[in-house]
Image 1 (cartoon, rainbow, N blue to C red):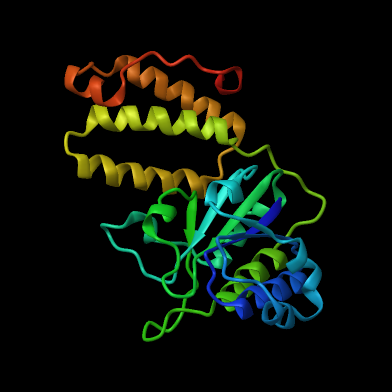
Image 2: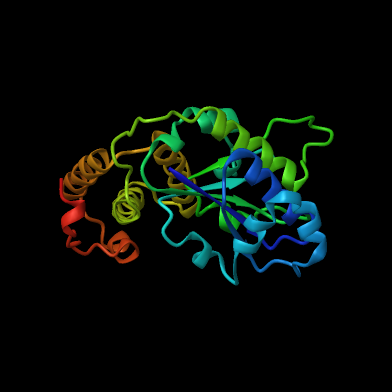
Length: 253
């Protein structure tokens, strides 16, 4: 799997240059910068012999452009999660590498927030799963370039050569899966906070499972049957858009 490094609103030239250097050290080259600071001589100096990666970096103004063409999205955080923030209950870099992501077809985006505040919850909620580097709780936040180095090292050292797994779940299939999941949750749960937390929990389950296309199609078919069996509730049908969904060919089991 191709890995794309996405730095969201980085504030320091030195960190951008250092990230480029780390990427070259570990064999990665796809770098996207979302609304970065000015990139000049300082960034080039810190990149050392990785100036070519810095020069080829894509500078975009919004995250959607940086994620175009990516099948999986991995967020990073330095904060611990709790019961009320399911997306913050992250996996470690080692656990990420053990999922075999580099052994799959497709592209994975690895997102890093800026040096001051990291990635906001609104972005973390859109990721497939979140990674946190274990650290001293008294001083848990790593430098941006250090974080990139640790995670890329774990991914590169676990990479399996010459083996290809089943095709991963495409973005289109995931959208169908999320749509049916939302409809079932809205039929089952009354309270908005219950729906929200169950949705976040299942998002994490789907991300960790690394579903294949065939598994995704089977789940979609199963969820469609559940929806037909669940008694309709008029109030919820308005919220969930209780419409019949016409599946594209890709989503059919």
